[in-house]
Image (tube, rainbow, N blue to C red; front, side, top):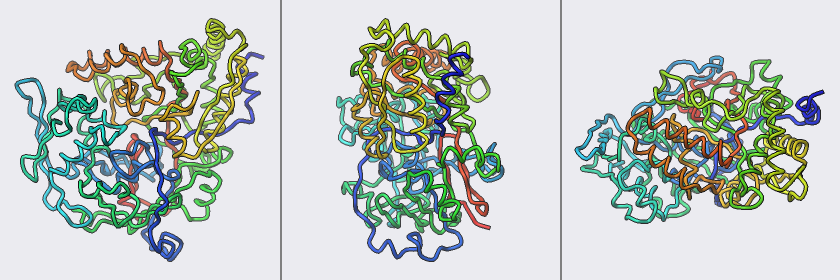
Length: 574
């Protein structure tokens, strides 16, 4: 019996799939909406066109500038709207079996735009805002609101983990580094209906950034109250829905925003996000009809749900990975990090645990991300190739090499290696993968790894603070470009949970940001991935995501983008 099969038998009791992605800190507040328990969403009479969904437990934040997680982003996408927005294409998403359509990029608060190349090589995008766009309290949305919001994102006072989203805007990096004032950001409002953005050079994904939650507008007088996101009385937004109920650790419920310019196209009368993280309770809620949409379920149910057709699987551009704290021993040693990376049997995790069409991660940037030729050519992963293969022979060789590396680091057969802890957020799926990794590292390397799970928001904060040895992590693309996965590992980056720092890496990313030749730009990004994954082993990719979900049979009109966002505004029952 080969070692791979022996390891599979050892892990035979470990089963389940991983789901949620995101990183950053999280804060909570115990404020609750008065009389919320008497509302329809709290258990009263339910209207025919109401929808109750589950993505995760308490979200990190409903402030567009402060959220970094997919579940929070889905909520924000319904409450706010940027210059651009994702809209229903009318074409079915592959794998959805008729339950979901693809989302395509369209205009949001803007109705048109022009692009001008300036004499100094910078590029200016001029957006013309729609007539009749308003905040949920009836006040007009103006171009100055966008100026304020974008300046707020890059301001060090905001400490937005996503400030680098605007790094292509003139003066953004100097502001983020505290070298210039936010007022000097390359944005302006010549009048109430015109918003101008000047970029250092054109970015192929810039319009997608304009639809990203971080770049959605907030109003200065509203966000001056630091608790503004916790009560409908203070929560002002500009999207298709407005906040109606906010019960911490229970539910977030929203209703159509009567001041939204396109409210006539909003079909739902109420959209409620139930905040839960127990997979059994979530599936039982779906079976009982209390939940209309879910993403999480116990692993022992997955195969049967797929076979029955009740569980749908669609594409997602994301990577599930392990994050090492590169600043603390023993994982400050790249030899140790490489040994731990090579000791993982990714095929076993995908085939025996995840079981939902995931693909072994041979690198960090996942399949489906464009390379130099965009959507018409090979993707970034195909061009870049794999750093470790999925076959039996590859894994046997990987294990031998892993033992050699650990011995070279001073821990032959694991002798003298300290007991380290693997941290993950509460979920049956993440627990099963953690147990599999624990067994692999023990079997292959002879090291002891303890497991610790934490509630979602607490986990996010600990991971962000770097108060861990190894932890579960994941990333879903913010826009379709490898930069969405690679610029996060720059020194001091808000989403750099590995505490990774390499001046050579930083230089490659900075060069890629200003390179205008697509082929040369992609070569720089391939070099950057080679450094962070193939040389420094700062992170350890496990698999490339798919997105699984269940939707009640009587619901139509949901649409989705592989960036991880589901949209429910057009949903109807019947």
